[in-house]
Length: 276
Image (cartoon, rainbow, N blue to C red; front, side):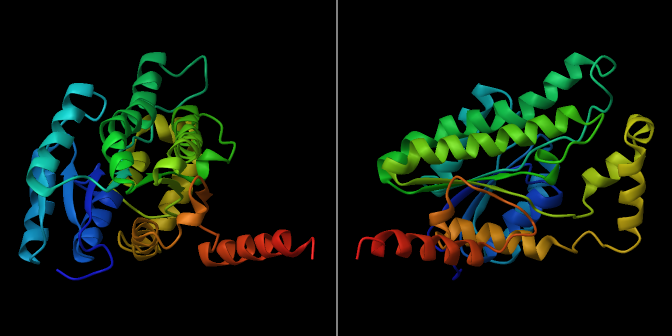
């Protein structure tokens, strides 16, 4: 398969449905070999079958993204079957639990943090050493506007996404001497299964009714693929190296990476010529 990501090997978490599935399919269409992982084997098997029908390469490895043993097994299996990992997309996430601090169950709240923070940390730990040794690696954390919007009764999701942004920044800083890049990307409003889960959740209906109402409004105008092209276009652009100069940044849905690059280049030129 020819494409912008030919020769690359990717792991996409939460690849069985929604945004993760779309990213995995797009990466494969662009020539990458894709390791698909999620808890539900049947879902990632179905995505793998779709990739293979299009003459792409991949493997499906089910596991718990919050278990170090599972993550190490997933990465090892992907590399044995497809080769050294050059791309990692930390996409797995959960919208709840919902409720104010003092009401929300701390155990469920912490489980959400494990998926949003521990899971990316485990996957990055498993791939970073190899990426650094080869001086070739890019990591994308799928974030959310909730990472910078103050939304009552949504602390588990909001804090998890905020931490993912900071983690991308820290990893980009540490990985810079070794050729490893990291990004946090806001995918925009996409009506995935997670949105359906939120709308159908009694807790969400109780604690974040305005968000539920907004999702119902969007569902009336957006299909599950609307917005997905923009998201996968951005993921391919970051994975390809075209925006390596933006490593460490959180990219909002409203921002144009090309414009950010032009601004950086203009500022850099001013600094270089200021003494002339």
